[in-house]
Each structure stands twice: as C-alpha cells, then as structure tokens.
Image (cartoon, rainbow, N blue to C red; front, side, top):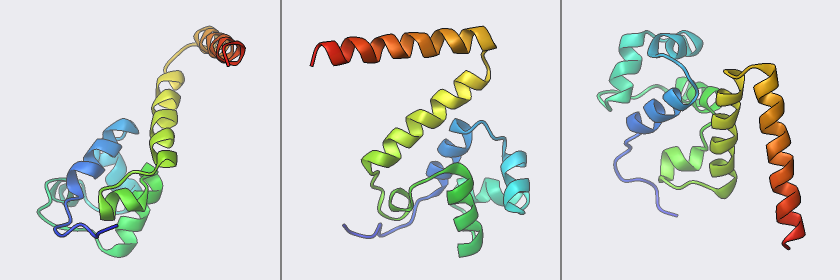
Length: 115
C-alpha cells in the first residue's frame, strides 16, 4: 500500500459530509473550526491539524486508509451504505420504516432459499 503522494482529502471530506447530511456550518461546529476553514479544507487550499482531522474521520465515519491511501476496505464500503440507509430511514415515517424492514427480511429469506 503506497501513501498518497499528494494528499487530496477535500473532496473525500465534502463527499462524506454530504452523505452524512451535514452542512458545512454543522460539521464545522462539531469539529470546532470555522465554516470558512472547512470550505478551504474541502477545496484542498489548506489542511486541518491532526487533531481536527481525527475528529473529522470519527464524526463522518471515514476509514483512515481511504483518507491517506485512497483505498477503501470492504468494511468501510459496507459502513458507507449502512450510513446512507440510516439517513434515508430517519426521514421516513414509522410505518414506512416497518415496511422497509419487512421487505429486507423477505429479501434475506429469498436469498437463503436460493443458496
């Protein structure tokens, strides 16, 4: 695994911020930086210090390998999908959530029968 020669983390942070449903203002507040500084980070004009980068990675659930080596682990990819599903589910009514759960269980049952 080779370390990324030129660290381009801005697009990754922006993508994960949007996937997690945060505005720049909301994420900046959680990280304790200004929205303007976050905007500069997302445009790769500057970089956060290691403490702030660590907070970003934890808040947005980014795999550090993806940040530093531009490689996703399979667990990381699954976590991305799970996070996106959670965001969608939070915006549904209780009955819609129950329906999605029921359909997911049926899908698993069908898959198990076909194995």
